[in-house]
Amino acid sequence: MRIDIITVLPEMIEGFLNESILARAQKKGLVEIHLHQLRDYTLDKWRRVDDYPYGGSAGMVMQCEPIDRAITALKEERDYDEVIYVSPDGEQFDQHMANDLSLLHNIIILCGHYKGIDQRIRDHLITREISIGDYVLTGGELAAAVISDAVVRLLPGSISDEQSALSDCYQDDLLAAPIYTRPADYKGWKVPDILLSGNEAKIRQWELDQAVERTKQLRPDLLEKQNGKSFDFNSRTGRGSKEK
Image 1 (tube, rainbow, N blue to C red):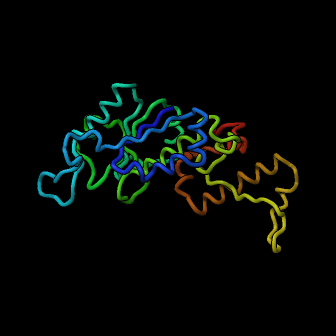
Image 2 (image 1 turned 180 degrees about the horizontal axis):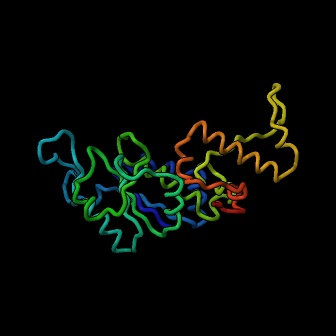
Image 3 (image 1 turned 30 degrees about the vertical axis):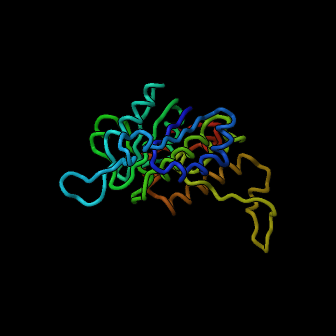
């Protein structure tokens, strides 16, 4: 997989993209992540990429030409499955979308800045707009980093225990069950007996029950997506699937 990120602030996320799972995935050759300085594609001698909006609105707008030149240059080298613009008014990013994007080969992520980008870029070059939440950031760099991280960790081989990714929160629209580690008793705070029982079937059923209960309490909106479906606990460990 290859991810190309177009930005005016590559240094803002460069360190993030070269740490932890993202770094290991790149070293293993599972993914290539390239940052492209948008200012390198402007013909303006001052390397400006923005201008005042028509109509007299406040703020500045990213211009068509440098964005078009950057995307065109990348497309001349390879085909892209998606050209993504990260924007607060895009479709909401979630685990299902991360799963879908992880199956692609090449994607471009364009980071907006200022008041956004010229609408003509959105109309003619962008294939998908994605938001990571209902709020406004200084630029799209953090959103691009979030999307990259969520997608890359799903690539086979990125995580040593691949079953771990399959049991993450939101994979089946449920929150994760509570998790514990040693010691079993700390200051009188005890790990539930069922987790110490060694009975795998009962442990998995307990995890499912806890996941459903936590989701009811904290994110009941997720359960509304189920449309009457029930869950087999094996689906949370990669050993089964949703059942109707």
